[in-house]
Length: 289
Image 1 (cartoon, rainbow, N blue to C red):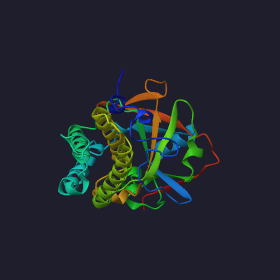
Image 2 (cartoon, rainbow, N blue to C red):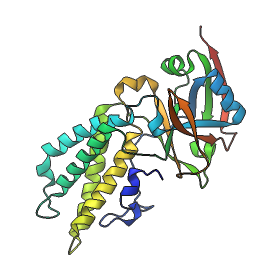
Image 3 (cartoon, helix red, strand yellow):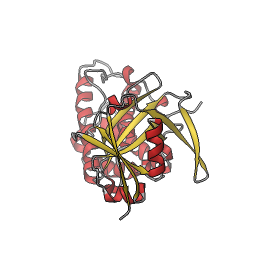
Image 4 (tube, one colour):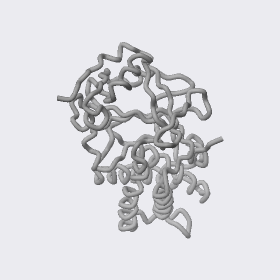
């Protein structure tokens, strides 16, 4: 059976020294759309198929057109690592004589960066990505995804209602793609700082601590956050897309996972059915001038 990097990590709800629960979820600081409507740009043929079947073909995260997209975050992580290395003195609390907490964090970030440089560290990933936009008149999307002769599908901005949820597939995250390198660094650094403060406060109340548990908790939390961010960080070069992304999570080896050939290689996808057709508003047809 194919495995994901997450299966090699400690269970999120079984971490020592850091509580992850409904009251304290492991969130990432992505921007959520406040627009009333969202749009999907596609070719005329694909648009007609979506309308006929009331469903989308959603590609697995490692089968995107830009094969370097998920790897991009290694570039961001290098900047984050540099920041923490230059500011080590601000985080000078020791977990054990050999390592400080911040050194464990830096080692974890370096390991992630190295893995992303070689390829997305998710093998057989169970995350599938759908691209939408807040802009119904995006020239770049028309030219590149509709080829100036296609359909823009318009929806109410309620993804959970649109696709619903069941025991096989559900929407994990919906958020704006972040294109600013500076903002990407700030998001990760801010998240790690907040985790560091809470984690340290929990350690102070412990009479004895287990170094292996400390390492596993730091590794699990940072890996999980970085993996989630990786799906919503893109190079500024692509900022014209103004992408609003939906990430679906699917159970391994279930009947919803299908395959198609693209550029000579098999691509995994799922069929995400529109559960509430009242959320779908209308197709917008257009042709080149």
